[in-house]
Amino acid sequence: MDADLLRRSHGRSVGETLNDTPATPMLRTGERVPRAPKQARSLAKREKLLEAGRILFGAKGFEATSIEEITSKAGTALGAFYQYFSSKRQFLVVLMNELIGRLSRLNVQMQPGAGVRAGLLEFLAAVFRTDLAYFGVVRAWQEAALTDVELGKLQKQIESWTQARVLGVFERLQKHPTALSGQDLPAFARMMDRHFWCMLARGATMPPEEFDREVRLAADVIYHYLFCDTNK
Image 1 (tube, rainbow, N blue to C red):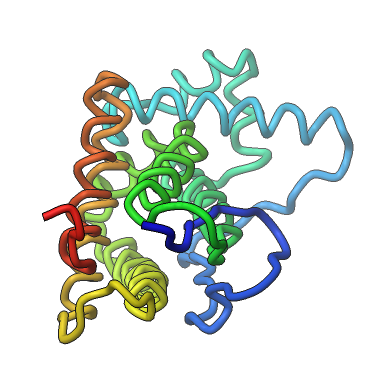
Image 2 (spheres, rainbow, N blue to C red; image 1 turned 30 degrees about the vertical axis):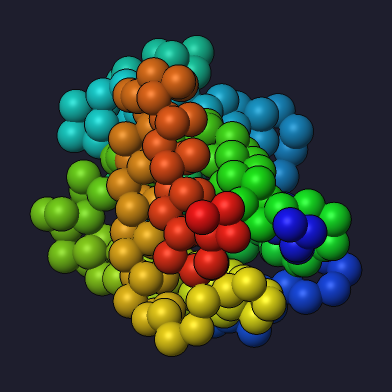
């Protein structure tokens, strides 16, 4: 079967994209936000701290990771942390905003010449491979949002935005000639969006082969819900 291929692209895209979805959320809390550094040396030091946080949050979670551990892994003094971040919580918000920025740059467009089923798998695999470094951030964020009321409200904003983007993908797929009609796309988008976030949160501690298997299963679930299987 010749069909459309979902292709992932960064930045400006050609053709049909997800630009009609809600505006990208910018996460803000009531905490003070230190001024971003401008000098190259300070920018590099800040990035080392963020990288250390991504790794440690993935390995230990939010509560079990201390600022001292983050600065030690980054090779910086403890005082340097507070030059760029007001707290571990605000540090986590910065990391989550980075991830949302990456997600906002994911656009999809349709290209002829490949099977829908293979295209779905290729698309999902590419998305999850891109965000490997942020699996730990998602784990830490979800942990913190469970007990932090303000972060919990921000999490609802994120979910509303990502569910709209997933729904947009499904609506485009349903326009394909072989797609099933009458499917409950909003409910399916909410379900799959929750599953994707769960995968991201668990990805930091899952063996790569197990994670790849879950990506394949997710692609199969989407395909079988939205399309007629012409092989049957």
